[in-house]
Length: 276
Ligand code: SF4
Figure 1 (cartoon, rainbow, N blue to C red):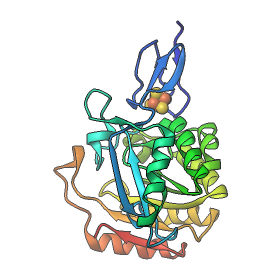
Figure 2 (cartoon, rainbow, N blue to C red; figure 1 turned 90 degrees about the vertical axis):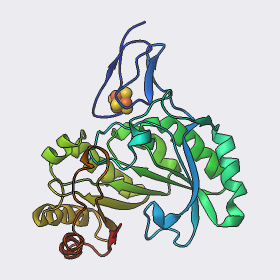
Figure 3 (tube, rainbow, N blue to C red; figure 1 turned 30 degrees about the vertical axis):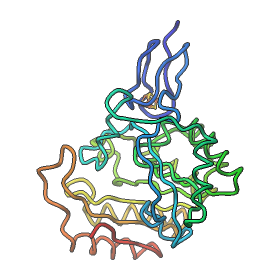
Figure 4 (spheres, rainbow, N blue to C red; figure 1 turned 90 degrees about the horizontal axis):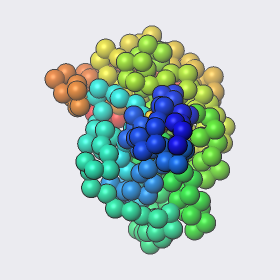
């Protein structure tokens, strides 16, 4: 069987039959890049919509939040590395078919549930599951939310867009060099945000990490770019706490967050400071 190049994200992993990609979620089977973690759920919780975070979408409601394992980025401060850098062998999971997930979501409607949020690890590397489960949730008259790093290709985004009502997308910093440090791709993320904002409710999250994303100039440029799309897109500016390989660092000073929020407010209507 021949090798395959996976074009789901910027890494373009070259995979031999049976190989797993960098993300831990996709594999080469029968000469194709397939979603190896399809339906493998490691975490499930009924959470407030505000926790995703979404500040201007169905406020006061709940959303059934599910995640699997794997991620295509490699942020040194990952808050979820017990699943983002895991694989099928290193973390417990249970299989939930798209129809089963939709039925669970429907069963929680009396508790205020609006549908399903694909979150916790990076859901877009498993776009086939987001598409299929998203369609099943829609068929029950409910909504879908995706919480993502936005670092996947446009054809992948287009596959899921018809089913997604709201996104929270990380905009982790505003330089190509910064994204390189995090094992990501700046241009791919900008293109993802611009396209998603044309067809769904979009909110953005910038985790303010000292030395990566905490300068006024960077936040000013970031906010100007977001405003060039739509100044009503909410921006969440959130506080870093020592995690992952940045366990030895200090949390972001609270006054830095509020100063950067003021800078962003010069361009954007809604800026929310989080994790303080
Ligand atoms: S989605 Fe996974 S396998 Fe595909 S290119 Fe990205 S990291 Fe590699």
